[in-house]
Length: 119
Image 1: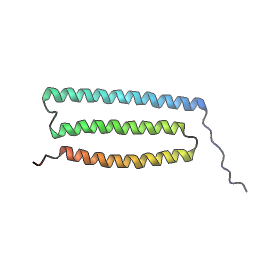
Image 2 (image 1 turned 180 degrees about the horizontal axis):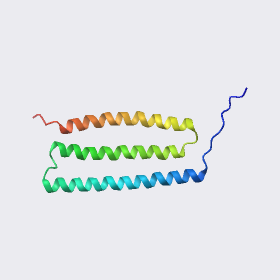
Image 3 (image 1 turned 90 degrees about the horizontal axis):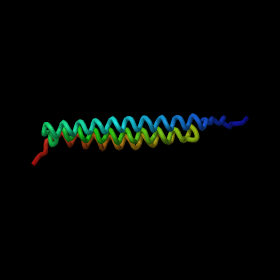
Image 4 (image 1 turned 135 degrees about the vertical axis):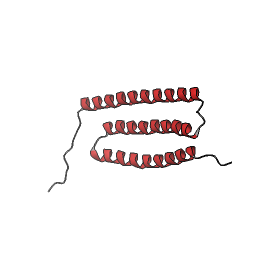
């Protein structure tokens, strides 16, 4: 009995379409985050709250959001290019491991940003 699994190939046109869609979504979301950052910076400047712990945490939160969105889009682009299911599963596994570590670091940093300095 043969244990050869059938090969599943995604047509190049579909792969190209998916890759372009991921890039368009990345561009739109990056633009949105940049506009949110500009609005927040403008508000903090006009209200002179840029150094308050909540403002610092908000700014760091935006930066973390941008990092996490970038990582997710990087994964999406890699998944679009994956040759088979095994490679896609490995990419997903690597992403989860990396993002878990990043989220732990980000949580620690946000926690320290909102805590008052002890001098």
